[in-house]
Length: 193
Image 1 (cartoon, rainbow, N blue to C red):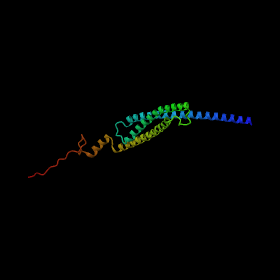
Image 2 (image 1 turned 120 degrees about the horizontal axis):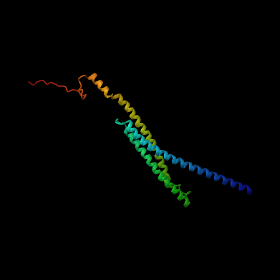
Image 3 (image 1 turned 45 degrees about the horizontal axis):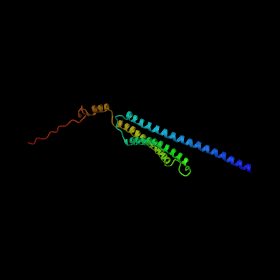
Image 4 (image 1 turned 180 degrees about the horizontal axis):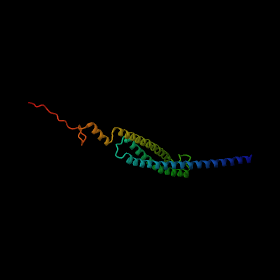
């Protein structure tokens, strides 16, 4: 019975070591995934902001823009995303520092690991992700509305050449050729005699 008890304790200890190693592996993978998420999100947000500025200056240069609120919303959300992720780097470092202090003091099992900094870091990551997707939807709406509006504008506003041809075919002297304005009509008043 004594040998069986020792085997049981040895098996339990081995199992606990495996679980600890598995837990450490998952914590490391979770940390790496969180770091990658933050890096990709800040890269995509900054790139999207820059791309939208370039896109705006090339594709819509000199054109009337419609629904600019969507554009400003996208820019604001990308900036919020970038700032929240940058700030989450600082709160994450503080969270790790707090966790080390908790382990050193022996209070790690009594308190939330990392304290309030952990909660703030999680909230900032969520805010960054949500802001990024709101920005993507906003810029898609903005581009869609302006491309559709641009096509509508082309249909409603023919080119200057077409206007000139239309003028010569239909107006024939009722318009001033230089300014395309109606000629003043002279009204004769009866003489008050």
